[in-house]
Amino acid sequence: MKQRSIYLFALTAILLWSTAGTAFKLALRGMDVMQLLFTASTVAWIFLLAVIVIRKQTGDLLKNSAKTIARSAIGGFLNPFLYYMILLTAYNILPAQIAGPLNYTWPVILTLLSVPFLHQKLRVVELLAILISFVGVVVISSQGSNPFTTPVNEPKGVFLALISAIIWASFWIFNVRDSRPEIIKITLNFFFGSVFTGITMLILSKPFTWNLSTIPAVYVGLTEMAIAFVCWLTALENTKNNARISNLVFISPFIALFFIHLILGEKIYWTTPAGLALIVTGILIQQLLPALKEKT
Image (cartoon, rainbow, N blue to C red; front, side):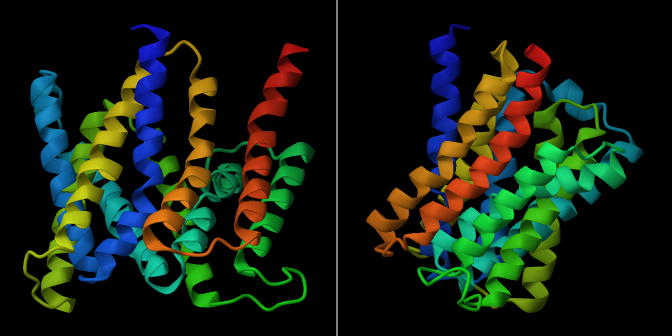
């Protein structure tokens, strides 16, 4: 595959992910968290199953043993069920421009969790990077006020957004030990996630009907959860430089602010891009400086 096509797949995924926060908010205007999550996760696994059939990977899907199916069920409980349930609840409480960037702290949390679970050592540069990113969290949480003298606005929403990042980082560690093809794993995760969500929805949620709010929910499942993943996976499978492609994802939250302002009409606080820049700076320090050290 040509390099231009690889970047096209990667940028398509980034653009779709950038619209997710806006779609979350639009869908939540007419349905609750469980209704949105059930709709989106069901659409996602059906689409991904179709991709598996088109790619002629059904053999890989049928090779699953009872052990790997159980592993997929656990993964599906973590993501999409628990992860999105908490993240969408945070979106229900916070402005989209706050919930989204706070969730982007997951690479920082992943570094911390890698110490006890993957037995990795924490270097001084990584500690500095983590500190920079968490200063960014404080700045974003102030929602336009002085970040160092004002109490955190809507602390419950901030807490939930950060918890969702911890869950995603935990899911990543759980998933990295699984050697099955990525598309097989994620399809089964979304299938089990929709089962867990459907059961929870029947118990806790109200019946819902298809209406205009369903359109953003279907969009979330089709794009943010499915098409974006396929595009991103295609880019990573064909590139010779995973780091260069992977680092492109950090432009997504900045593009997301444009859609949030344009479509949702949120006034972007000065603290949002400032704090987001600090978070991304911390993440990039973790990723780029060790690589630079190896080259020199």
